[in-house]
Image (cartoon, rainbow, N blue to C red; front, side, top):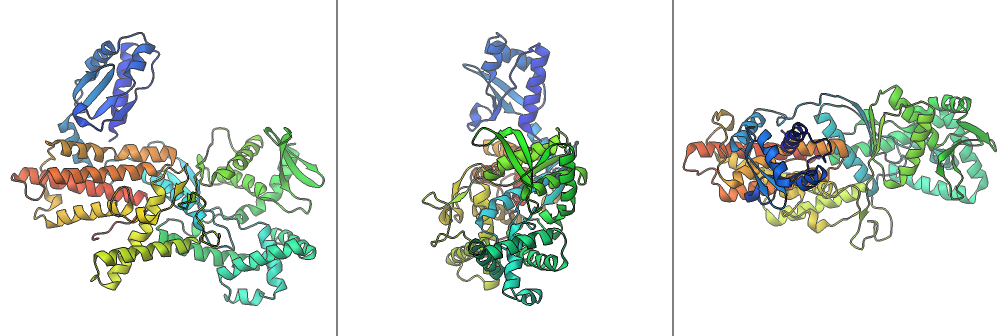
Length: 580
């Protein structure tokens, strides 16, 4: 049930019946001070003035057309020109009953099902994941969970960079150091491979012969040389096996079958180059193949040139991206493609999209979205790094979170069995890191702070998780079996009504995330829901209500709150606990 949407539609239809042709869409906002109404039409003055009508007169016309609907208890006018709407308690009760008996909290699958490719995480091969990969990974995963919950056909695409220049350098270095056998026998770790990559890069800068050899190995690999391919495959396997463990630790849904690296499109690249040349989109210049885009200008104001094949016939990242887009539309039949990368990729993506459209690889109505995100900063407002200035490894960050959570739990419950302590620490620590990140608007930078993320107060994961376990504890203490209650929920007190409305706002939040990919709205919602329950708990006796009917009603309301909190946390990829 989307209360805001229902009110908005009712008023829009009333405006049409009144005969207004020029009107702004009604802006419906939830009221914090509910004594003035549950919702307010915030732009009634604008609509009225646009049509040369007095706001009060317009209010009367609207109310005449909608007041008999069972959703409205009363609608009052507030000067200079606001409509304050009170929702009918019986209507709320009916809606809550539907949610109570629904495994999906009353949210239906979308009518217009789409095939949506979500491109996220995208770690570097031959390197350990660092904290820069956290946002793409967990924000993308929330979007995937949301879209799947709504019934879309979602294709997870972990677009790993497994077909670039770095492999030529690594192959050359492994051969130079005679490490092929050791690699084949699984005696080399990812940490060592990353170290080899750094050394090979330095050697490339100093040794022209080594640099030339590395280039040749790139071309050999891209042309299917068996030996180069074998080394490459082993490096990719070692890296991704390491990353899958991190995904599992993070409770992220990416699996091996979702890995779609640049290598997947390698066989398409020669045909793409040939086709772009035949269509006169690409030209040869100084033995390189380039596409000039009039829509984009370089520093001299000239059309931007995008190189898609180098002089040595090696393909580039841009070539792969064009083939990837073609593949996602023609093979995967995508209706919508969402990229979760940082803002530096935006211009590059726009260029690739422009080329793909010119070549008719994708239609103009294909939805292409770049969901950018800001950086994680330290308290000095600089990129969050180690004391030595190195980028922090993601596994180190997660281990630190678990250790801090363990210390915090031990301080509160020193007699807790070690096994339970470790289990709680893992869930609370990982959840705290994820929630802290997800609760920030993805478009902004944010300051990473251990102290605030692990507190049991405010908009944090421990606060929401504790609210959930608190409700489970209340339900467990009750002698009344929740699913045996046949009586309807009765809403009398203001705190009950506020909690009911907040529960019913869940669908609105889900639809915002589906459209905008902004997990922070779910975090804000869950915090508000937990706060509403706390207020309800303080003002309404649940287990010791004098009337059995009231007790049953409040137990059902508590159960619905827990159900909504759990579903919301699940959408965020955050685990719940039965005890804390």
